[in-house]
Length: 365
Image (cartoon, rainbow, N blue to C red):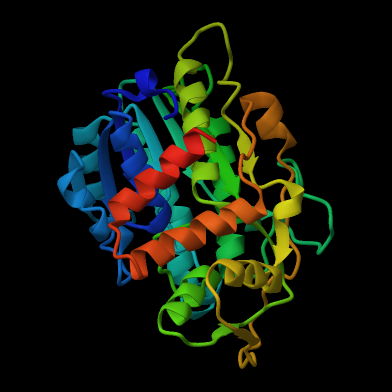
């Protein structure tokens, strides 16, 4: 399971560890032997994968704090002294960002800068992988995959806040992480932009898979808000694998090496699926219903909120630089995701065993 010898006893901090992706990442790193600590708000879904995995009892430290509280954040980080940080804490929902735009900007931009400022006080090298989104690109509704050097933008507050976060991180890296008396090159910072992540254990609101499986579990019709929208669907394990590889590269090639100006892996990377996984929501639902029979119908959209219709990522850079490539095609992704939920709801299997089964299946695929 990944590079176990590298991760054993590494002090790893995950922000947003109580969320869907954060819970999966926490579990995986614990299985790899890392000493994992987390900073996040309390889980905001019911059920909660974090609670089902009993991660509060497995972690080295479990801090339920807001990353916008700088003094507490700085104090926690000074105690943990992490070797590696995965920053996932965010307000991650487009529709929620319309309801609370200032909160979204505050968490996604200033919260991220609070992390970097707190980490800059460390007197040791630290690899930092900051998770943003595929929505950081200025969307032109084109069929081509966006590359890491394409124009950033964002129509809605969520997308724009994540694009602004990318710009702020690049500025921080340029201003403070090179070789000079004014710089402290202990931080090796990269950003990761992933596609629409799905998988077992997600119960977030306004997401198609959680909405679908909850409807199916109650034998109700699935209501699809935007069935014609196309997204780069990928299983949660896929980008997490990329994050782990990127963190290893950052840590091993740290910028305290006096032979280099800046860590060559301190950059932005796309982690998306292969092109054949760029599917409409309607195609996603049709595939899901093969493995869990039911019905779906178009929901009459009462909101006028703007949402992107077409979006996909170019992952050439991650393949060439990191040697990362997705393993599972669209069908396997949907099949494994549906299996997780059916086994959870119908067979009463534990979330812990189901996640480990997916990790084992993925790593031996």
